[in-house]
Image (cartoon, rainbow, N blue to C red; front, side):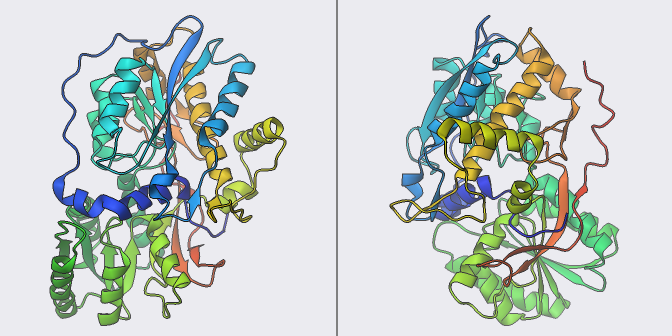
Length: 461
């Protein structure tokens, strides 16, 4: 399935926008304070004979309007269309979904903050699950839901360390995690031969340093790939002058080490200000990015008329693109589109059909449809596997034995004990500024199931 387009943009673009606003300061401070101990509610909280209370996160796009050129339309209306459809068609094993919507600004320091949202959903409303793009860079909001309150969260941009700290099967994502992407990225690079004869240096910040040292460096050394120094940029706020000076020093060190490839970990270290400096000093260096949305920075350079584009030829790991997913819809995605269009008597424009609102913002309705429908359908699929006795404990048992799962966004996905990030579709891609209007990822290797069949032998209960 060759194609072009940025993988998983629906969530990452919001995450990236919030990062632009505040993540530099947050990276140094460590985020919000940890959630305090809270007495767990009884198993099955939020579930009655007739209803299931489900929290749904709604992003306030007005709060980040200065930093993004898109929005997702009337999110609550979109989500409610799929709630209504599920309820009109028997609900979840006969129980109706009772949605609890909460709107928030995805910027640390704003109210309600992630911990306030968590306690509102879990303690005040007593929901059984929380769905949606719930952003907290520290992970404390997500852990408050799953770990502190024994409540299910089907979310996005989760990290392995948060999932590992949570009870099994409670912190789930239809996507992948960046740690999983890294574990797939390195083998793809090695098998493609792209690192043959290369000497790899590393660029990261404090937040991603562990990922580089624990996963990437050992894998490359095991494969006998030459490695250079790791530049850990000390970013303590929006002033990056100290980090710039550090980078100058490491560039000279990389040159002396014969480094001709730079592995960039995360979104902060791969920002334009650092990449431009590297490419000016080392114009022929090959860039590797373990965050697929680094292409957002590359596209900004295209829009700014930067030539040559410093990100040109950058290699990354992506899954199925939005264009591909929309062009050859899964059975469930087609069902989602049909449900929305029937309810609204309007057509859902795809990723190649740009529509703008009165504010001049691109309205990415197709992402809202895919996300809300996808989260609700994933919840229903697992809950119906549990059966009538819908408790947290039984939910965990069902997830741990699930195996292959049909999702709205991809057919290549699975869940089982210890594997709670479902998406298994990956491939190597390169950024090409000539693709599309603003440049995009271009496939280098075919899309493949990178799970190694880990969950395919799982036996359902």
